[in-house]
Length: 289
Image (cartoon, rainbow, N blue to C red):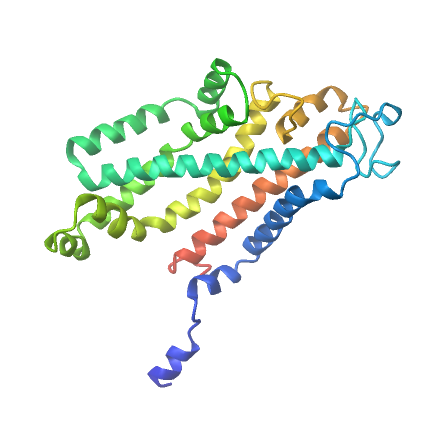
């Protein structure tokens, strides 16, 4: 076979081609898109809002009355609350991911580029924060502040950036010795340009994979904290505080816990599938590539 025929047989977009071969990742993307669309536009099609109380239909089971997915202990529509809670949980997860990836990437890039004393100080800071179990650190910080969406987002982000920093530092440290870095120095590029215009784009693949996993982790952490009463406070609904309110009705109204539990499971599993697919697609040496 000629060289031109071999080149023509290769996919034009190899990363997309490898990603499309990962069936679980495609399923994850589909579920994420459905969840986002449902939470974004779904409440507009529900005839009830998340705060409306229908005392005549308290504890209505799903598909057994005017409320499609049933009602809670106050008669509030579970579908409306589930969709509005999804807005909070998904937005919180994405916002926490962006903050933690930003902080971790900057710290790791600076530590990997400069090395020496600067790198040692920054990485010892990362190690010191990693010494504390993240869930206990999260609960401690949550107990010290007035709980709210912004506060919980910042707390989750500030307890999730360390792994990204270690990953970025390892990638940048390996790239500093490459020829293109030396060429950038020779032509007079400043340190900032070298770090963020030359080195970081070549280290973005593992950071991108970590970002998807951080979204899943942030959703779980919000659920943990809200379940324990330190997270998003009622009447604002999140999947975590819906689970917290449902625990006393597990035997009499199990759907109150089942529905938000399914939502959390779908979201977390889908983001994990997406991360696995990105990891395999961005690494041509992967056995799935």
